[in-house]
Image (tube, rainbow, N blue to C red):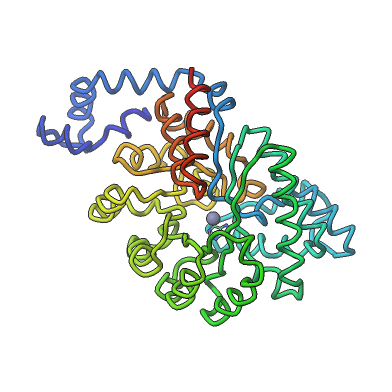
Length: 380
Ligand code: ADE
Ligand code: ZN
């Protein structure tokens, strides 16, 4: 039945055959007319591509380090730092991860981050993620951190960044994972607060490659942060922004036009605006899509309804990422696997998604070429 909903109302079919997409009979007609495509779809659904997914080298471009805090580590750090948590054990923590939208997740996510106190805590958090990423054959990561989540609790900027950065350096040496660090501003806080955070970051500029924008989207458009992003670009930072996750397509336009971003984080609501889709295709603007996050936060009711494949087929530079894997039930490999199964992604789609991530990354052209060659070897 899934194939029917995929094909329903396909604009080419409806025009050519003059069918009514709401009518089951007409719809059956359309299915037979496009049986080649349908067959391909079913073939892809039936093929087990999990081995391919496992072995291909991957780049992860949308990953909040605070969102990798697994319940086991949360409990251990709470104990180490003598912090009381409102949960008795791991099961109770996991039971609390029942989200209805972005805000219901963020409330729990910020509360969980309160167990992070010392430089070693940030190191342990980052190292645990890197080990997990290595097991998914991740070869390059561009991770977000939210300094305000920590500095607002009295933790120094230096404590946070030294812990994260040292683990990333060790990951490059010992796990062969290259990295970039992206500092995000919390958009529910004021623009002045973001500007102060940017100033605090300047002494650590050599460790930070780009700035981003995250947290509660609706009501906090990119236009609120024009001055801070202008300043960040003057200081030499690249820019990215979460947009079109829960917020409207207008926020994506603003991120492009006002914040001059290099990538859109999420961006799935772009599909509602044909002109925007055309622009994103034209500019080869990458979207860092996070399927399991979108499912958990109810951006889509089921993974089968996710528009990732539609965006990919429209020619967009789509990538697959895990966002906050400890909270959303899957790291990057699991995001690939579940998306492949739910959407009937082909081996070619998997290749394209993995390649897009290297192309969209902030590494040198030489490194991109090297990773893509590695990917091509793994496809054989
Ligand atoms: N911070 C962590 N995860 C986020 C998400 N999915 N959207 C916005 N802000 C976030
Ligand atoms: Zn995110």
